Amino acid sequence: MIDKKMIDKLLRLHFLILLAFCVSCNSNKKTEESDDANQKFPSDVIANLDEWKILLGNGELVDSLQNFEHEDYFYDVNDGKDWVVYKAPNGGITSPNSHNTRTELGQKQRWTPKEGGKLTGTLKVMHVSTSGDARVAASHSVVVGQIHSADGHKNEPLKIFYKKFPGHTKGSVFWNYEINTDGDDNSGRWDFSTAIWGYDMSVVGSDSASYPAEPEDGIELGEEFSYEINVYDGMMYLTFMSEGHETKTFTKNLLVSDFQSKEDIPEQTMNLFVTIGQDGIERSNAYAGETQFFKQGAYNQTNGRDPETNMVWSTGANTYNGDVEAQYANGSYTEVWFRESSIGPGTPPNQ
Image 1: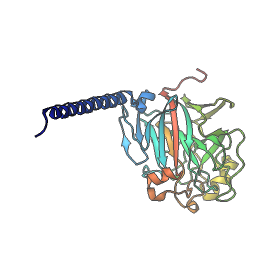
Image 2: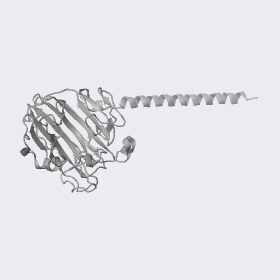
Image 3: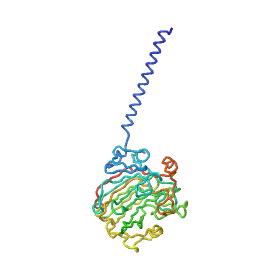
Image 4: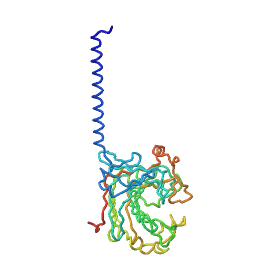
């Protein structure tokens, strides 16, 4: 027969175990509730995300970004400051008119160059692909801001690039202007590239695995810089700033072309694009009358296509058959962090 005192002790012990379990459950619940309360989304960092939609590196298009995140492509991180992370592998699902993956915002509103618009961004590039053919201009690069035409050939009057060769500490920041090709055939389109810090796009390796000298005035991975794109009354005003670097400004007319004849094609273009058969001229009024929109994020310029198909854009990088986890583990991706962004109407320059 079991002793009554023994039964009482067992009952008390059982009660204490149940009490401890309940306290633990409540504690865990409170912790989970606290974690939920402290969780931040990209929309908590960048206040104007309701003016954007996003295309993710897996091809998913999301129109509403309030309290939205994706653990592989688009999320918040804090290193003492809050940042929005944009991440895209070398190989994945692309948009219909591109061979490159992106995790990139697209502005919902449309505007003409005459009407204007303004976009700003403060960012740091954390990674670009470590694989790719060094002879190909687009290798090891990412586009972090764009103006894109929604009409006609749907070309791009502005792309802002960051590019860093493997083994270098510093990379280059440059901007490209793509001509709005005259006529119905857009196959002759080309970019003209302008250096901001470091090199322009045309500086490439002598062979697939040899790199030019490291740029002396370049930007390192993880080094913060800012840009302002201000289109006002048909003129594009660009400003680039980074602590410890000279502030750079540029102006480009979007209503009148600088490239209306073969004689206007720059030497850089002759060496980079004309050699692959892209030798078009631009319509005289450039992008006048075409609706435009901004893009911002990480548009990965490194892909797995055979360089022999296009020595400007086909980079021959590792894509691991599109396996995202393998690409992230082996450096076949790009990653860009933004902590500030604003979008709105264009303003008179210097205001």
